Image 1 (cartoon, rainbow over the protein chains, first blue to last red):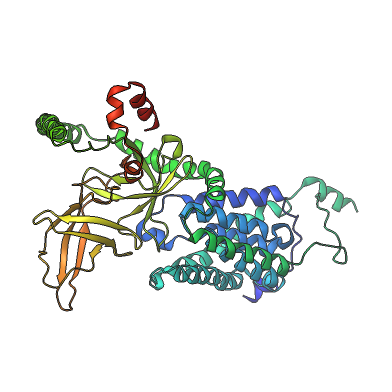
Image 2 (image 1 turned 30 degrees about the horizontal axis):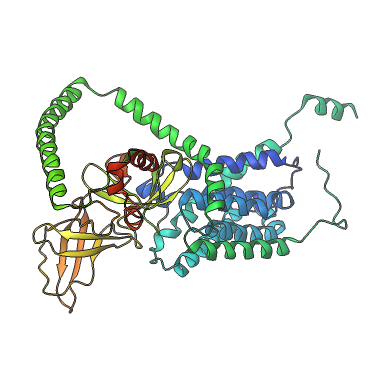
Length: 179
Length: 303
């Protein structure tokens, strides 16, 4: 653990806004796949995960408006009250933006534990909204998806960070050797 | 490529201000949306935005379905074919009897001067996906207002009633299942004609009959069909079977298992039967229609 957290912070290329949009669209697509039954209760909320990732790595580019819009789209997709996912997402994203410097200093697995709390926060917000709407309380299984979501954090982070990592460019190696 | 200003430059509103701003909008949206139809316009726009993603997300499952059905063994196909042939024969006989009965019914209605039931239009729809939200029992189907689906129309499968169309978007619509907590359906017990209203029970996928006296004439296994008195569901469609009765309190606690289900097929039918009560309120042009040949044509176009 010490190894991962003490790792020297590597310099990353800034992510382009187009890439952020692309990953969000991909996450929406994953959420909209026809999941059913038991698998459905384990399905992580990919949109929330990707939003949290960008909130932690590119908080200024993500902002709050985009998460809000993604939440509205999820509301339509799920047939939920308009604003339910939107509110939950901006709550989690705001918390992630506030904490992003702190979270960035940790290794991936410790980051995952932070993400678990943020996902639980979003899920609890949605639960509260539904309870206000007069729905019956679902069991604790409702929060299972947060666990799988947090478990997905390290691989997802590695995947989404790939394009920002500098590729071993022969030119840079050459000029570095030249100095 | 990236021009991030130093922190002492103006960055626009702080995340906290933005969060509060959007949170307030969300709450307003939720309050407005809790009232039906308040946010229809925004919903339509968002639904059209997301519908390509929905189709795309559904395509792998569809492809799997298609390849699966391509590699069916011949024996199974033959068996199924024979079975279907047999069923078709049976249904053809029933159909012939029904045609005779329909003619007779029309004749009797005419004799008694009863208003004829409205002709029903049917839209065949396919389920895009089902049951993602643990709180509500809803399915999304691939037909929308373009195909003339309207909110309030009942949806059935080959066995009985599934639910009711609650929201309609241009290319898709949302059907609330009978088992949803907010869904009610007027029913009739086939055995003795007792009328009641069945309510969805939520997550366990059953219906219940509240407000029935403890000594009500209900038995285990009783078949419930739609009574048709609400003008939304046509009469006589199977709804559920009584599965459990508790007669401890002054009201009986009756649970029923729905006959139809969305877990068996992907296809369902949306009946164009809703809106009858609105039609009934309009001045009925039935008498004038016989004299002037223009009016029924106009009426047909409206349907």
